[in-house]
Image 1 (cartoon, rainbow, N blue to C red):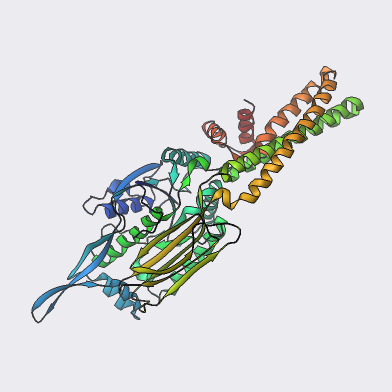
Image 2 (image 1 turned 120 degrees about the vertical axis):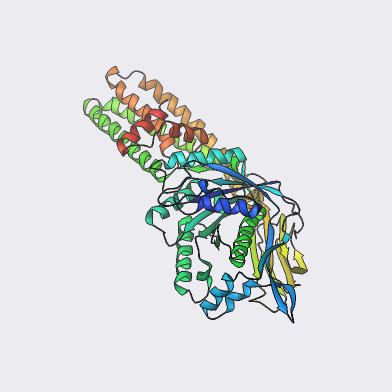
Length: 520
């Protein structure tokens, strides 16, 4: 059931990321099977051994209304067969893990049946499958660009899934996850993690080593993403050949919960997406900057030993040009910041999910959620409620506080989820005002520096031709500094550098190619 201010979108875009053999292609096939139980699994799309068949970014489109499933058990009492619903979720309470394993492996008299649909109609889900994060052969920048180009085609992103398999949290994988989280910082608001290739036996409470491993991975991932919000984690076994109804039902309902996230997240508009430089790009820029600065200082020192007057003019010229460049960069940064934050896109102020399993939480008592923020008013409230009933709500839209009480109204599992939103320009109204003030001051400051720069350039016209090479070096230095000292790139330059293979080769070779591109 959907709360007010909510209606399903006709299309949702889901991006998959993960290392080689993390199970991305298998996960995609599982999603196809979930959307249509009659489809035949494409074995060619599933990697195996030491090879993955996903070497390009591709999109798989599925249509589904997000069905949910239950297990029906056929029993015979007094010679009369009867069918009743089996709550397999309660099996996790069995103290003996062997009893739990026997229960979820049971086949006889079991049948998985569809019971409900979350969406009122079939919607389109674009599943964007990507090559392994650790399988780009040093072409991380090209991989990033291919992902960005694909996202630009679909225009919005509703969900990003990082797939993690087994206990393979290698340093290279951690570095890759951190890289992609830093390159696309705006996507962190829609990221979740899926722990694949998980035998459901490990979910039993006695499997302490597995649970400790998952918790350790959660802490690592939280640290890598450098984000305050807690990310959602799912564990799943995408065994596409299982004939055990309960295991299959568990998988189908987990896939439902994952895709349901896409319908609940506030989508990220790609037009607003910022592209940060990768670690390799930053390393190359630092090297290039130091090399150019070194060349200039050596030539300036040589000149100062020959002519103090000419050296002083050049130093003044460099100082003022540096000031103008700093002001220009500050103006550019502020305008870019305003482009991102001075908009009416919705940002999440608060979100909470209360999921109640009947097998664990049997009592149906009243619970509450509450939120207050006296600096920002709430602009929108969305609910997602299943087998719960809202009792009392206060505050909300147009107010700075909100609270709700609710109660489960069924013996079945239920959940109560809420997201509170505010428009981004309302959240950042104070910084927006100060940025506009700062921008006005910088524009006036630039006019003053430009006048001084014009005067000093008139003097430099009379410098002897034998120091022209130093002037050329300084001009090249000034031009490149506006690019290499920034942490972000616009899409045009990012694409140009990638197409020029500027970040392939050793550090010296990369710096030469980057310099050649920018000097165009």
